[in-house]
Amino acid sequence: MRTGTLALLALMLVSTRGRADTLSGTKATEMYDRGHTIEVRLDRGHAKLVVTRVFENRFGKHDQAMLHMTNLPEGAVATGLRSLGGDASKPIWFVAELLDAEVAAKKYRELTGIGGYYPKDPALLSWRSQGHLALQVFPVAPKSQKTVEITLDMPTRWEKGQHVIELPRMGTDALAPTITFRPANAGDTLSVDGKAVAAGDTRRLFGQLTAAIAPTDPPKLGGRYASVGFAKGRALVHAAIEIAPKLSQAPKGAYVVVVLDGSRSLGDAERAAELAATRAYLAHLPDAKVQILVFDRKVRALETSFVSVATALSDLKTITPHNGSDLDVALAEAGKRILTAPAGAPRRIVAITDLATRSTLLPKSIKGLDATKAVVHLATIHGGAPAVSRDDYDPWAAVARATGGVLWRASAGTDPKQNQLAYEEWARPLRIDRLSVSGVGLTGVEIPDTLAEGEGFEETRLNAFPTPSIEVKGELWSTPISTVLATSAGEEKLWSGLVMGSSLLHELKDPEIATLAFKGGAVSPMTSYLAIEPGVRPSTEGLEWGAGGLGMSGIGSGGGGFGTGIGLGGVGPDRMKVLREKLAAVAKTCGVKEVRVRLETTWTEIVAVDVNNACVTEGVYDLELPAVFNQAWASWDVTI
Image (cartoon, rainbow, N blue to C red; front, side, top):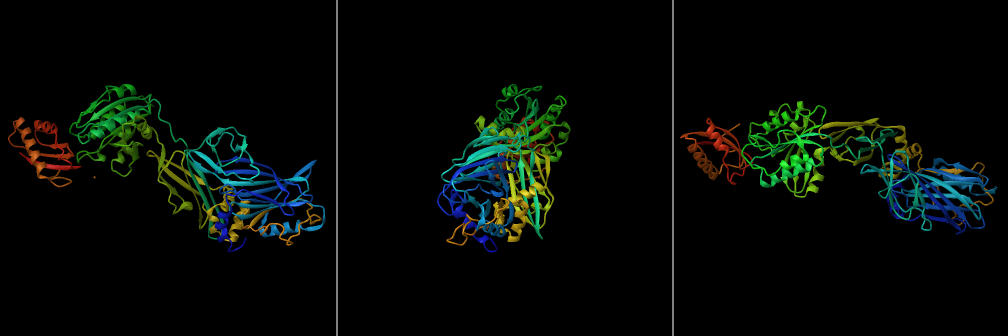
């Protein structure tokens, strides 16, 4: 196939892929499919299929077997051909050579033409389109069989922590192939259609099936990389990023302090959700030792020492809301308590809060948590379908990140099982976040920000020049993780061939296709395999090329201070009237005739009080504000 023909490939693919193979003879209709076996060797990143075909000629003369292979696996390319020759007492495999497609076609025609010699075996494997190969074998002796072996390489995809391939029916309508599966690495676990099988599992391929291997020792962050320079200013790049099927284990024997927000700014649904989230989280740490703290402007401990999860959960009942959100005091108390955990024991602090605090409480005010050697998670909470998601951009995220933890936005519902599924991620990292790639190999490629356990990302592209490696970086919670993926001779050869089965083929010029095909040892629009038994010459049983259209048409063609007023939402006269009435009552109770009170509210909660009178301070903090106070944050300056 030469310049201009690649535009037809998509049409040709539609017209052939998915059909059964067709087998025929050239001289007669007496060519039959008598054997079809496939040995699949599943490796990490690709699979090799060794396909053995046996043809039987029932015609009384030597004939050519012509096989159109039109239902190949997606992305499969031919990388080898052998023909079995010799005699019954001493069979010999003749290994094919990869040649220029036109050269191979010309030689085949010459060697199978009519002449004065005894017939011997040439075999030609050529390109028709992606997913369509043509095999010609001559001669197949009368009343006898001929065996040919074709090697196919195909890419795997990384899915649920496994290297997966899908195989179509393959073969002719008359004969379903017998297929055998083996892992390339003995320690890897082999499965077929989701069920684990032993190496050497054999079955008939009557319909599509899925095969996979689960590597026994996958890195947390791994993959493969190939970069092949094949012409001036041209390079082929393939990168695969793979996340292990299990990134971590929940800690054993952990010591945990759970900090719960008991302030008024949380509604009933949020308070119920934080209790549900706590139960769901601790379900993943069954052997942990736990203390639970509830805070508003004070911190109340439900236990005096670390207790079992069951005991802690039995202490966890309803929370009576109060004013105040002194998260700083709560975290300091949690840090003090976690320091009493045994040396070497895993330490965790989980604080569930709406982060609605006084304006002077800033994330930078929180000090010393890193010295506790505890991973600290902060989380906001809502009622609803159970879910957790990280937020790395809120200023409060820095508090958690300094310890290796995360700021979470979470919700929890009423179904304990569903909650438990969602909250496993607080117990252990389930994904690698903040993914990035450095190195020009994938410059300009948009990769996912997050890949969960067992997920992967793959890209095959053309670059201006080859690059030896790329570095992939990410975070487990907030702990950095990285790997360098470097090109290798094996990956370069593999992908030089596999590009013939990819969409990039249509972006290559003929000479570029040839260069990559020869490097990858693959049949392509520019290359074919020709197997020749030594001594093959035109024979007395040769084919009459050009006479009556014998042979195959196109042979060999490859085809965020106090202040005054409010912070948000505008001052409503009703709110100020309510405050004056309530503060006047507090002042009267305290025997104060005149007082100036400055305060802050978050919704109906009073989070800060500034007044030079202890009685008034306590009285204001005991107030309950009505629902008209519906601003996320506001400041007030009231004189009575």
